Image (cartoon, rainbow, N blue to C red; front, side, top):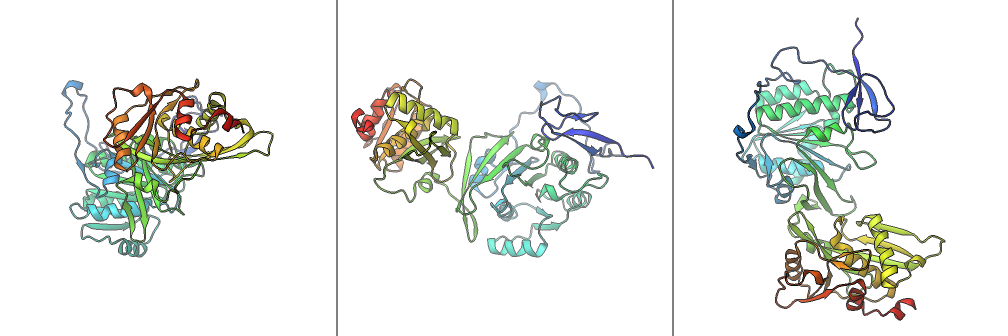
Length: 464
């Protein structure tokens, strides 16, 4: 019997090589080359990897390509539609990843319940029995005559069922449980995940079926399996949050049909996931009054302004090197701001441990939160509250200047809508801002101006 042909494959970029190497020649990743058996190609001409017909494509001048807007439909969740770019696109392949138990299957099963009212939906599960899925659907209140369930892990059987049922929406839970006959490796391996995803991608594009696939994540928090998996799909969604907390955040790491800056916020209830249309109120709920070491800022998540509370705790250090811990704020950015605060603000941060946290599990990736972070740290240092009705927005430079950020009018409108009376903003934005009636806008130019306005701290008070 002839020996099966094997190839060497990079798990990071998907590049195939003729021999094993310590470093991938394409992407430069170390120890990413693995060996696997090459999958047999389709025997019949005009057939895809799954055995279904694939129409032959001809080259077309770019000026003659139809630019009609893609067809979208609502998933039933406004937050999910926002992250997808306005709804699910017909014929798209979407990958949903997240930690075990975070709510991926719950989100997709509830989406099936909404979609089954107008479309034919097939839910393929390889991790649960039909009875388990039915019990969970009853708990979530999901029902519908057009919602079908298939308990199967064989890819050929799944493709055959799809060909007979002709659904509009397919959910595959999960891609790591599927296997393709003819590939000599176990389910979840690099070659199996690659071949199964490729077959589903060809099915989605050729038949116009929208497919959501669930992907597991590894201990580093990235999607398990080959990196090429993320390159093959149209959209990659991450479902994030702490299992002990009620709130979940859905964000897009890749989206061919929309922006990757939008987020969706959900709350996990006994009856399933519920949308949080106003995340600012959620993130600020339970805020303690007149507490030192806290400051509110406004960041932009795509086109949506979101208010977030930044907390800081400054204590005298008992180590030769002070400790620095940040959650929700980039560690290197936090270290930079602490250095600016010591050099330009006069606070001896080198003798203090600093702990910075963003309430609600939100990650602040833009510089508009710099000023609020510094004011929260300074407030904890002097043990004096900033004020419950104060919001700070602005970027802090290395020389201590306060710089303007984009979308200031939208941020200020959101601040006013939630009842805050005072906003500390950069003076460089003067003349461009539309200040709502009843709101006080304090314009600052330097870090010392901001410290003086927020906590009234003098140099001698900080040194004591």
